Length: 194
Image (cartoon, rainbow, N blue to C red):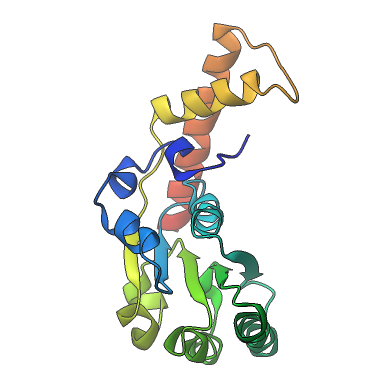
């Protein structure tokens, strides 16, 4: 059900238009550093994976909830070795980067500065307050928007039509799913305000 290319991604059209900063960066052949900022469920992880696929780079994911400085350094060292030994570049995806301490975020800098990794980091928090300035200044900051009802409807339709696991939903059932998605957005918004 997940998209296999950036063209199949639902929502975030402001980021995907031809000539957009994201398209320019990923269509180039240089290592990149991207910071994806947006509410939960807007496609940050999917975009990171698609960037990896689009640029033919291996994908390594680290969760800031569970990773420490040691793990970050190990991943960057592995990426450096892969680049030196095989020429294979790595997209390092750090989910919830705002949960990393300053020291943990500092551990990302050698990989970024030496171009051993292409860093794609995701956050639901304002990066101007939650990401260290040396990392922020080296990043293309992309703001993701909440999915619209039409976006969610497209995703539901794709899930239902998935050939691997076909499901039949009538219009009423699809409406219930859309209202449920709206309710989840409201809960997320309330949680952010607390």
